[in-house]
Length: 158
Image 1 (cartoon, helix red, strand yellow):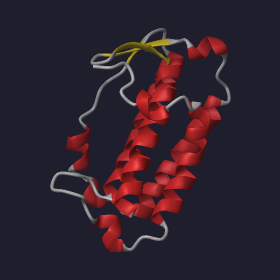
Image 2 (tube, rainbow, N blue to C red):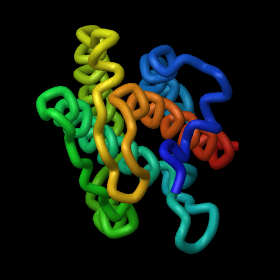
Image 3 (tube, helix red, strand yellow):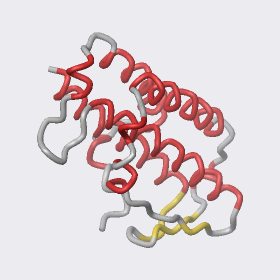
Image 4 (tube, one colour):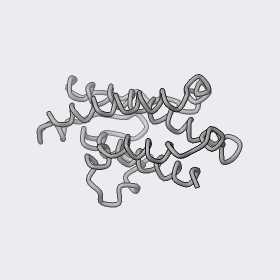
């Protein structure tokens, strides 16, 4: 498995501007949509826009912990999670709540990122499936993950 499977979505972009713009982009993409558009899954077993946003909110909670874990431990071990198992609960979440949680957690993480030193960027952490990476690899993963799901929402919104 790749160290950062979302790196290809960055296409040379710096991660901080991506992370900074994602919440506003989510609001802009979803605001004009009807309830039916937000709930429509593109195929059986694929997520609707609401479910993608719920996934992004869940992942922001996970990234919040991973970033802080990396900064507070000598060499943190990341715990993977089963996103499909988490997705079985997404019916409980409405779009507005998912957007609000994502925006609040993302803003909190962006504030944390303003405190990062060059030394912090290189702090190691290990993902059992992906290997040893740095704090900054986590940040780049977040940004690539954002782009991936924003592209999915753009396709579903048309």
